[in-house]
Image (cartoon, rainbow, N blue to C red; front, top):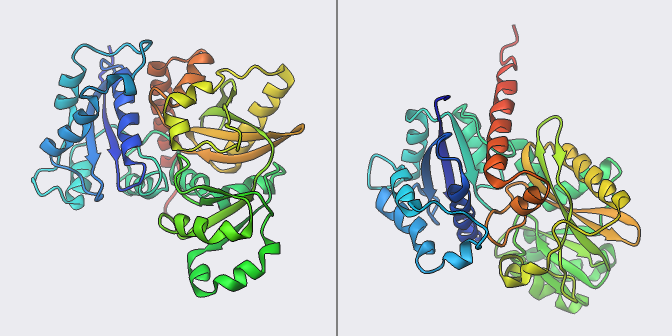
Length: 380
């Protein structure tokens, strides 16, 4: 049997979606093939520091206390020694100080074979961790720096896919600096915005955090004030009467698409955090019950968007169906894992169970790293 890969699973992070990232990491750890990987968990706390061992264990084990039904379903096969594995797998800085610099030192000195970043939103899904891993030449699973930056920024992603002919809903952007300088001019020039009703979103968050649906310009102030707590750029997007689908995509230069899922949308068309990660998410249809022709269009559009955004490893591409037109909504460059997350579910429905999906995602990270090593960094 081949020697196990020494895998550093990085999770948590200085982000609003910290809790969701920890749950995703636990779900991956419960399903990873422990015979194939020598797992080391590096937990980043809410302050952006690599936590010492005691604090990291507490952060990872606390969600498991009395909350197994929130994390896992009856269909999940969880190892009997799961909590013992978590305790044993936690890696930590050499000092109890837990400063972030020691995390950099740990990554350098411990000679991991590959990293698996599990972060959602800021300081992890926006390219920060991927850039760090690139700097120390450590292979990692998932989208690389270019893809995480392009895919995580909702404005940039929409412009890039629109440039290759994939339609998007009408949108515009407002920067916090401009809003704080002259609110009245922006509201006076409201004709330049996409019309109402509209969704007002932070450009770089997921999980519907900070998003508002507004019916008129009178509600713009409040919606933007919420956005600017989290991000310096707001995307204002025309609300459409649509059906919404998600397609999982994995791979590098020759990506593959999963069967589509159809999200169960409430009457206002707005999936909030609770709708995505609670019992309400069970209204999603996996796989979507749609004609083959539409399935193929959704898959083809998802792959085209994936390539346009320079994504690699894995992503979930969310799409709208408006009348008979398929529109790009957004990319999730580190899709969620867990009982109420859909990425692993749609791949299971497509014939790839989670342990095998993890293997594929890791292998794509190693493949991309090998390709990058072929580049010449000297003129001669």
